[in-house]
Amino acid sequence: MEGFGAAVYMFRVAPNSFFRVFKGLWFPLCFSLFCIALILLLGGYVSAVIVEAMFVVAGFVFVKAHVPRYYVLTTRGIVVKRLMGDVFIPYGEVLKIWKASVEEVFRDFRVESWFLTHAALWVFKQLMSSKMSYGEERVYFYATDLERTVIIECCGRRKYYISPEEPKEFLKVISVFLGEKALISKS
Image (cartoon, helix red, strand yellow):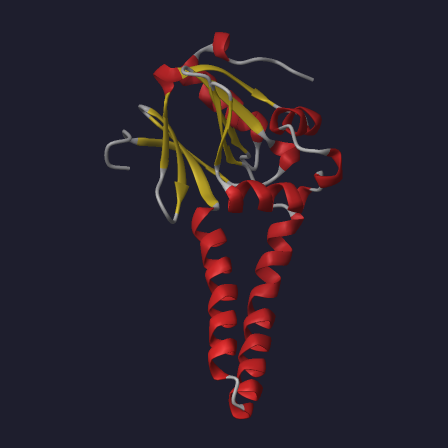
């Protein structure tokens, strides 16, 4: 945790059904692509099969590299651990923090109603951009389960969406660092 302070507490990322399906399909999908590639390879369509297989594998790797692995509370701030680049949120910049409802997450992302499914929203947010701007406000989405989303509002009109496996425990532990005034109790 070099540069982020000493690690105090680590929270696992809340899994959802999309991730379980994603992890379960990894091997069958790759094996199927391999078999199709061999069949087409023998038929003479080598370059098209290789390019398409590379796109599929690159898509899986891209998603896996940007998905949060866990959230760490350190002596200086909150760290979102990912394979590609950790995200650091200093305690000094946090204005308020609360557990969000699913409706609040949908409303904050200003997504059309036809697009409101857990998997579609998550894929849209992860693949298109982990950062969205609405005028002066910047939104960073590192949540994996919309029902366990915690919103961290910071200085500079920034919001971070994360989803620890145990949101109540996360809020309880972080209150030690932020004090009770930063926590918002929402039902």
